[in-house]
Amino acid sequence: MKKYAIIDIGSNTIRLCIYQVQGHSFKLVAKKRNVAGLAAYVDRKASDVNRKYNLQEEGIEKLISVLQDFKEVCKTYSVTSVMPIATASLRLISNARDVINRVQKEVGFKIEILSGNEEAAFSYAGARQGFKVKDGLLVDIGGASTELVYFKNQKVVKSCSMPIGSLNCYEKYVSRIIPTKVEQNRIRKDVLEMLDGISLPDSARGLTLCGVGGSVRNIGKLHRSLFNGNGENISYKELKNILEHFKEEKKACLDVILKVAPHRIHTLVPGMVILKTIAKYFDCKDILVCKYGVREGYFVSQMQKETI
Image 1 (cartoon, rainbow, N blue to C red):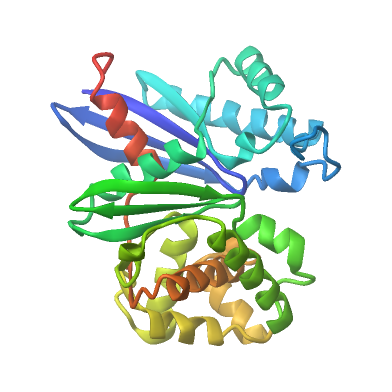
Image 2 (image 1 turned 90 degrees about the horizontal axis):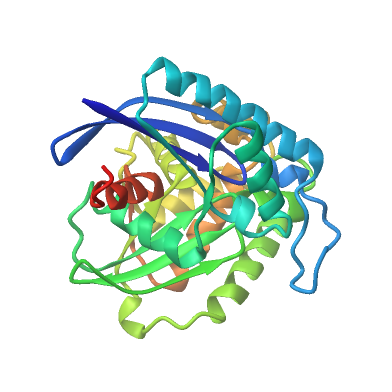
């Protein structure tokens, strides 16, 4: 049975997932992550007219080091093919081509950068592997971008990408670890301004909000830890109560995050503010935490090609 690897290069975390294929089905056989925090290595002085920024040499070296480690893991598992993809981590920088060339030369991996629309489409395709919601709104909160997909009768009606995520919100607004009430309001205002700039039909309101990505999955863990919930179905009221728990930076608050998601100690609350703002904006009373996302969606699309 053949094995294939997807490497998801995010602004906060780089993940390796190895899948084993048998016929038309697949299963996850190994995974590894590295909280590289590439966004922290971005030069904040705009390098071109589109206000994109350069990934600094230290960040490039960090990326190459992680990928070299993942390459060895793939060898151990006798992986047939490695497919590295990048989202906003490289999509939003101006020297992406230089980074891709360096990686290909030093590691031998050719990175594919997904556009915002492609990321949204693959997130939905992946999420569909684990739920049967007919009409809904999907949200994928990453480190540097958030994708929204409105779907009806299990078909995508419209998708969009916003350049705001849990990590860049933390870097832009948060002075310590847990954002204060004022800082949370600033994040909320930024998200609302972006939501006002996209055009989704009124029929996209009042639907189930299907959450994809690490931020949402770890909010599900908080749901279980704080309120004995199932971590899969969260009401808007419960989400509001979870966020209320982090209104102040107290040791008890930090301990909860350290217990369920220590690698997200600084980004989980900003991600929660983004999720709550979107849920309220679209009047979504229920949030479904999706098991699969962009990696699985991308992999399924590759499975459907003749090369696999």
